[in-house]
Image 1 (tube, helix red, strand yellow):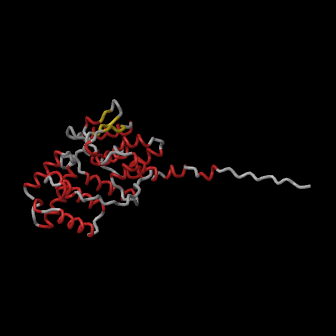
Image 2: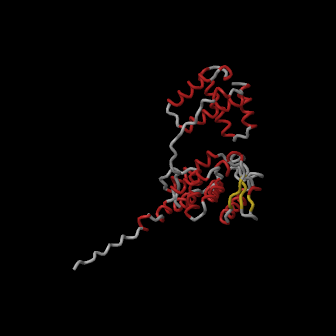
Image 3: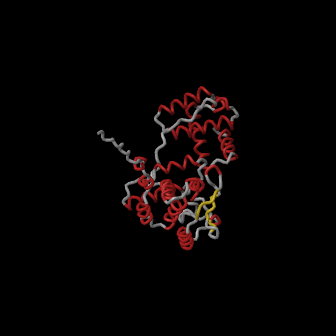
Length: 288
């Protein structure tokens, strides 16, 4: 794509997209161009329809297809200034399953199997605050506000900032980690091997290994710790709107998914059958 790729990357940067999203969008454009062997300026709606139809028929998932379409929409709407070429696109819908969570015993087992102070502390942050992995690894020392008992999230999803709670246990864990690791300022989680901010992939790998060592059958991911945080907060009686703010959800509807996951709340819920009073039998008057 040459100069067109540079322009698209520049436009994505100006729009404030995250690094990972920018790469995915550019890759979708490159894939499209390679399919036809022409510059995107020479391609239009007909080729776009053909390409999307082929992707949909290849067995690609709805989420992955949406990313491909979003990248092409950005290319034509913003970089090329030809929005009519992609006006026909509608996002594919995908069945949304319930979040997978760990129970508290499984969380304890997982943390016990994380022997690296770096990865154990990151896992504590994920479970103790509900942060996304992309948010956790970018934390800086100045984001930890011990006096107010909060952690500032400056680069949340969509570029939005928020604050989450800093529990006493997590504060102790962070201080212990900091004293031992002494990562170079301003960053909090730095790989001792590379000297750079720890990679999300290595965190996932560490959790996978710990899961096996702990004997857990569930496939543990950083996002599962976020789901577990939300579910356990809900089970502890925290209002769903508060959890929404902590997670950084734009809509409370997203947060209410956890009400369908919480087995504790389901078990405590009372069926309306229990509140039914037995019908009173009518007295039959005896005839003389």
